[in-house]
Length: 274
Length: 274
Image (cartoon, rainbow over all chains, first blue to last red; front, top):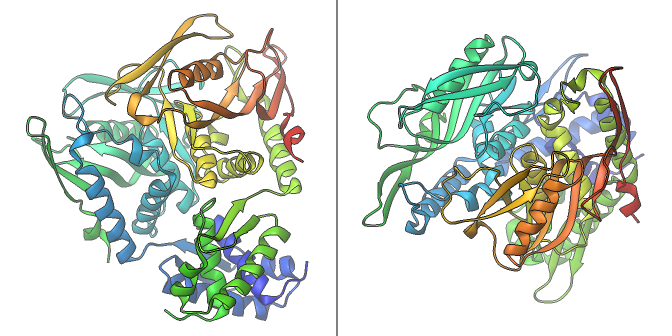
């Protein structure tokens, strides 16, 4: 259907936002709008300029016959700072304290708007790495993993802690939980991850890092490569960290159950932003 | 920052897509772009026309001082049909057969693109109902629930099957699983759902409906109202259905483990589309 420039810009913006990290040939848009490629190029220049100016991301253009345009989601430094400050403020609320020193986070992780922001934060910082799949462990990391995966245009695989699942042949490993020092099990369906995949690990919480470390061991069984690790909240109160490089948004520096005080700081996210 | 119409259209499209089912005052856009309200109205007319023409959704305008504009995500009949046909084709692949007559669906549920489409399908059909929250049960329904919740702009609550969770005070119920006739437990953190909420239940699979029925009983404990039920796949092979009104995308009519044959049909989705 032939569309005017103003309508093309609206539809093109929607299309690109729905297809992040995917190369779209210019001929696709030219045919979709029955317009000349030169007009499409002009449209894309406007979209690119606006995306960059408004902190939405950027468009990368690949010239040549196999070329096209690709939307790379980004987040502005300002919006990233705002999001992390908001998370810190939310988490510092003493009403989150649960027996055992745990924190209630269901309201934060249950809000698709915040979850999507977190997804854009991670997709932005990992946008240059070659990632085939996002991995997380059930249950709380799942929404975060999907949000990141959406913006990176890759699938999600979910590791389980129990074996009572019907997903066919499973690969399982035992690992030592960093904080409780107990031996635990982790399983992943064999057919859910191709050998040699490049994997981004995403989780909601990291104390000593036993769970993340377990996922790394599991990835070893698939000859897969860890391309990055993102955790929403890291706890500072730990004797030794089992994981080296990871990107956190929030750092829980102390939880005082008796005094009902939670001290929260910015994580190491901004160290990884050029 | 003052923006030209072409840039305004790009940014406005992005903003509206990121804020579905949310009333945005015209003054918000007027200030954001330092433009007259009359220009903003003209922009919105273009966005609305394009959204409707391209099957993205619609814009609803509320006049008056407390008014504004609201993006309502929809899916065109054509795109809905395409998505459901694709799901049927994917699910009919005999390689999905797992021991016990279960179907492997991780690849489908692990693809954020498909999951988002399913989210738009449900958000479209439930767009007129007053929904406060989307509920699902861990684990496989979680990505679907978030996708629907994103397009409806409401939070997600996740019911668990185990009690080993640290979310504070929990409400638990026992229910009889429809197919295995075993007594099972379901729990939900007390503070995760407000009394009297209007709830949309989303799940990936329904056989007799025991799990969905369990969620309904649980909602009773919160004096909450079931506003709708969406299941991705329903199984036809069941003696009696415990749930009355639900919307399914796909119907599994027979699974023959011996002959390695799966018969799949369209669900009842289109019966609910005017």
